[in-house]
Image 1 (cartoon, rainbow, N blue to C red):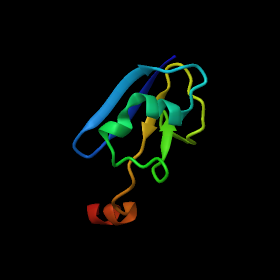
Image 2 (tube, rainbow, N blue to C red):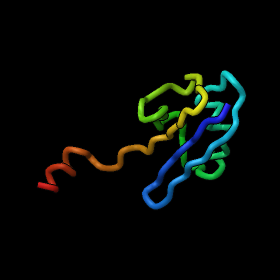
Image 3 (cartoon, one colour):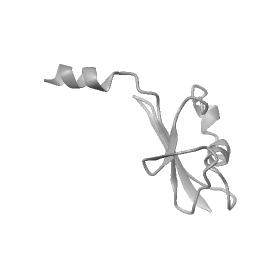
Amino acid sequence: MNVGVCYAEVDRQLWMRLEVPDNSTIAETIQLSGVLKLYPEINLVSQKVGIFGKLAKLDTPVQEGDRVEIYRPITADPQLVQRRRR
């Protein structure tokens, strides 16, 4: 089954397509993609993941054409940033 995996840092982005076995989970897909070797700072215990912008658990099965996303931790307080813009 063909799926995508994406991860973005402030200065670089990764987006790849790969074939995974049927009934693969998000965690298995991320492992198979090799993204954890490219970005050793990714911590799947603390970082959130999702499919097409919707949060999901690591044991969620992926489907044909899904885009698995690994989200970076928030580094700025959104309310503080909003006040600075005013």
